Length: 183
Image (tube, rainbow, N blue to C red; front, top):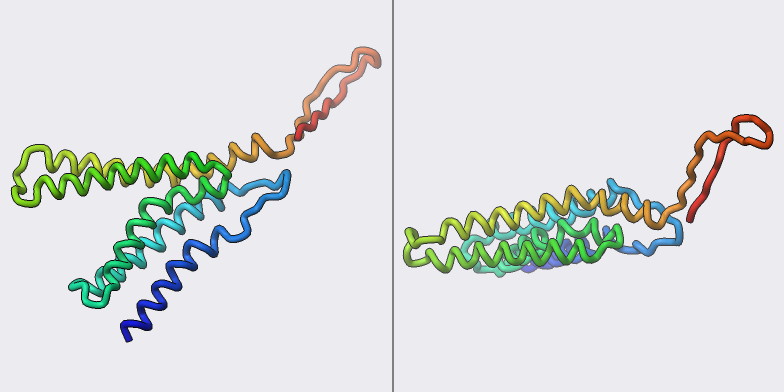
């Protein structure tokens, strides 16, 4: 029974990462959806973390190895998931920037755990823990919310723009309409 659960968990982990981003090659002039970018970030953060939390809580003693896979899903979902919308919006630097900052925040949390392992009253331990947690959670929320903006920026830079404005045609002494198209 445990091996069937493990197999299903591994298959779900692979599908969660592969399916939403499959086939995201853009044709020239294709418009990106800001909502889709935000949804990718939200989906690829919350679902792996929820599955990982369920796996860790199902194996509290670590007997079946499900807790290890669950911990991996928790880490991957929390660290890389919020930046998925940036990848959709062709902004890989936003993805890597957030992942690196969240890794630094997680390292701060781990450092605080090490510093206070033997002595919970050790100076600076709680401050490092709070700062690392705030960095991890703050950049995750920031990336999820700003992935839509990244898609909008891509559309402005690479999309077709059609602008119309009123004008006055002096040679005909009449009002007119100026239309400009840019690619």
